[in-house]
Amino acid sequence: MNLCGREDLRALLGRHGFHFSKSMGQNFLIDPAVPAAISAASQAEGSCGVLEIGPGVGCLTAELAERAGKVVSIELDQKLLPVLAETMAPYPNVEIVPGDALKLDLAALAAEKFRGLRPLVCANLPYNITTPVLTKLVETPCFESVTVLLQKEVARRLAAAQGSSGGGAFTLWLQYHMETEVLFDVPAAKFFPAPKVDSAVLRCVRRERPAVEAADEAFFFRVVRGAFLLRRKTLVNSLSAALPEAGKERVQAVIQDCGLPPAVRGEKLTLEDFARLAAALQN
Image (cartoon, rainbow, N blue to C red; front, side, top):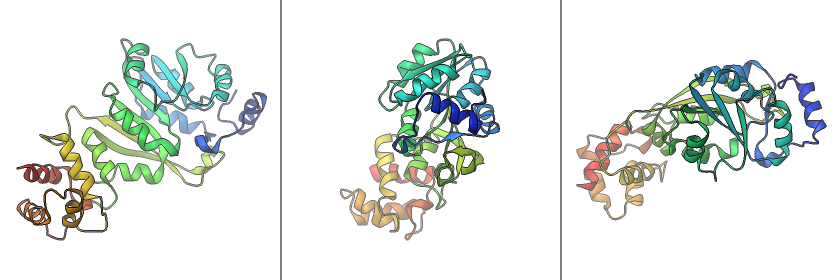
């Protein structure tokens, strides 16, 4: 069976009485070259255990199974479970876990399922849960890398150069923990049904240590988020609103002491800039 073949896919889903759910963001790949390329990009090998979220009918799962020691796929839609039971039957190293990835203890799951293996993540993420899922994966330190297919615009934003207008607070949070890179684009026509936007593969590799030193990480990210609170305003105005206890005059003085232009906006700062800024604001 060609899991990426449009006619085979229609027949498979029809046999199981499956109907697409817009709320779950279900769009299945129909070009076998794409899951093969995503699997290769994950750099999975026999010593790896791969966590997948939202396997669909299993076209990426099958590719990962050919590379990894074990693949564990979390599927929320109960109606896809019998489909996956059929399509994944040839792969003894694949295990389907019913449930919501946002509610499961992923660290405990990896520890149980991937004993003796290096845990990685590779998935075609539904657009509507990209940020919370990425947040949870980054906050689960056992995963060495995260290779995901997501909305092209989002992928570009998460890999944007620091100090450019392309990123945001979440971009900096992600890059604080991970090295990010957009690998290749995937046109909407490669999916069934076709989404309204193109996609891209984002690879995130965990840093051995955070990108910058932050004595008080919670305050550091309060400053980062505060800088983007009023995105079209200057850093002075945005941070003054986010840190009312600091006072506008002190915020102005600290920005000047850090060597930043008085009218600079938060989007122009790098993680290094924010580290200096947060340290000075706490002194």
